[in-house]
Amino acid sequence: MTDGPRILVCDDEPGIRKTLSQILSDEGYTVDAVGLGQDALQHALSEDGQRPEAILLDVWLPDIDGLTVLDRLRGAGLGIPIVMISGHGTVDTAVQAVKRGADDFLEKPLSLERVLLTLDKVLERHRLAKERDALKRELLSRTGEDAARETLLGTGAAMRRLLDEIARAGASEARVLITGESGVGKELAARALHRASPRAAGPFVEVNGAAIPEELIESELFGHMKGSFTGAVEDRKGKWEQADGGTLFLDEIGDMSPRTQAKILRAIQDGRITRVGGARAFATDVRIVTATNRDLPAMIRAGTFREDLYFRLAVVPLVVPPLAERPEDVPLLVTHFAESLARRRGRRAKAFEPEALEALAKRRWPGNVRELQNLVERVLLMSPGPVVRAADLPPEDRPAGARAPSQGTSGEFGAYATLADAREAFEKRYLARVLADTKGNVSRAAERLGLDRTTLHRKMKALGLDGDRDPA
Ligand SMILES: Nc1ncnc2c1ncn2[C@@H]1O[C@H](COP(=O)(O)OP(=O)(O)OP(=O)(O)O)[C@@H](O)[C@H]1O
Ligand SMILES: [Mg+2]
Image (cartoon, rainbow, N blue to C red):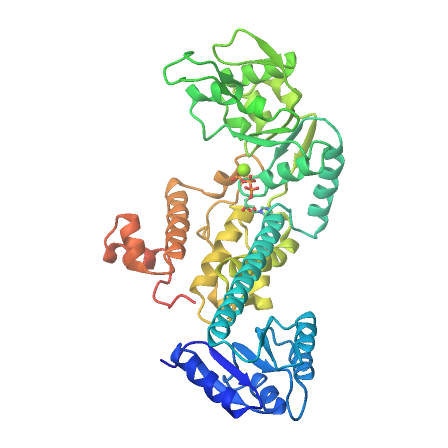
């Protein structure tokens, strides 16, 4: 056995070198043994893969003394364990060495058992420390990423204005209605508002009006008492109560039914809520922030959204502009998503050449920032080189000649002229997403999608999804 950790032994006594080499090799270590401080330095700092993973270093050496060798190694940034060997009368020096960065020391005459135990201990300690550092780094980069994910990026005038409004509205207790197309960053804006508010230390609780079935939304919002309906097996706090002292974010408020709208209005007017099946109404201290990609004034005209509720909610209206209206933010967002994706995968970020960024800034982005994020993810997987060129970009989702989105009224749906257009665009994005998830592996993607390989290939070709390239 010679492929265990490489150990460097440095001692001027040939007998000790020989014994240590023997016993350490028997234990599976790979051993280099030298008799001069100079040689130890050379070995330890060599660049040719002969570097040791630990050093046993005599305090007394004929050329340079052990402490100096230790200082030089640490000075050169060598982080491996160093164990000092002290002769008679040099124990003091060994203790001093530990203070100066040695990991441990052994006294002569050497007990071979001690040598092995000590070596084992310092190597293990070192391995754990390295693991801990790696974990810490990963954790730090994750929290860094989380923080970034929570931040609305953008340096253009439109985004600066929005951030400014968020800061001002955040400081007040006013109810804020955030509007904007799908994927523009409404939820991020809501979280930013919460963070900018005096309630920042309190909870941020989200209820999505489009995601919860009508029969459950009342209990979701206001909670329920045990036995108030089938399935209510115990008392439960609603989101409104959970948000006490913080912010309640009612997302997709335009998707809430007239019945739910009435309940919300009542709760706002009374400043009190009642659990489903509960006898008692109680006060909560909640700031309400809402968001929608619907045109609420149009819904009011159509009789599907309550005007009185609208005025309660839109005390401060905030509009998150579509990405197409702030092309100046596109390069920053592209770079940000490319970097955070690379970090998540532990890879180096690919750069986008300026022409590619320009081309992206000119796109219409009906799905806004979310669409851009998906595109970056897909391009990074599919583009072959270390640099993403304009030619690597997939064509725009929206087929040429389709009607331009009708401004601000129909949100993401305005981008599609016909159902066929919408279906095609969705299919393309969905397939691209699954392909990205399977790292471009068509067989695995086909399995996930419930298609056979040939059908998927045909679809990819028809939709202009190039699956033949090797994922990066
Ligand atoms: N300005 C921005 N900077 C960084 N990331 C952003 C920005 N705007 C949006 N994002 C990211 O884009 C994605 C969509 O954002 P978000 O969910 O906030 O949009 P939304 O308007 O709530 O969308 P929807 O209408 O579909 O609910 C998220 O991953 C978000 O982190
Ligand atoms: Mg949202």
